[in-house]
Image (cartoon, rainbow, N blue to C red):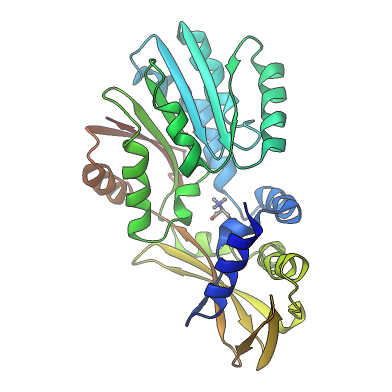
Length: 310
Ligand code: AVJ
């Protein structure tokens, strides 16, 4: 990611009303390490539920995938350790499987390759580093049917209609018989959701504050991070979970040569983690023009792996 895009997004966001920063910038080295801690928090139920589905339902998912060969393309693949739970039975069932992990970080892709080599020796792995808005273009020419994976509730970070726009964009690279496999966090008791984004140990707060520190490090900022508190909200009507940093007092902050003024209790909107019902997902599937869908949920029905067929 180019620094000047980061600078432009940060300045535009902080000069808007309401103020806004983008969660895609959470994941520098420090932020990625804090996210690993989040994944291990007892309140953050998402990874456990998704893993349960991959462990217990992979065979049922594969039963909906009729072809003999597949190219499995994973968006934002990370280290792929969870994906291996799906690839393992897929490789056993099918004649030929290729795995194409896409990620912004070349370092994490080499970890991914090592993990696959260890867990699934012989699997053909062709990683592509870069922004998947760019790199998806490279995969549309393959002749095997495709399974496009977008796991981990990453779809939740798209605000409102942007999720549908993104799914339509992905579909534009797909052909008849291809499948999109989405990991989606479902609407559930508001308190369960809120606890996942408002942990008592303050790890989620650290995750948000790290973006201010990153701005200090990379954009010559002087945020006094002690002047901000973290606040999370969940709206059971819309399913939107939002994270904010709240300015505890009136203050001025310098960023990349500009002065940003905060009023007392003024929020910066940091992140949206949208929750969906299975009915919401059916609507999206219809609007995006997919033929069919199947939902595979964990035993608590907290999370769904949803398969959309072109
Ligand atoms: C990685 C986008 C799925 O929204 O749940 C975790 C990021 N933010 N805690 C999410 C996150 C706060 C996470 N996703």
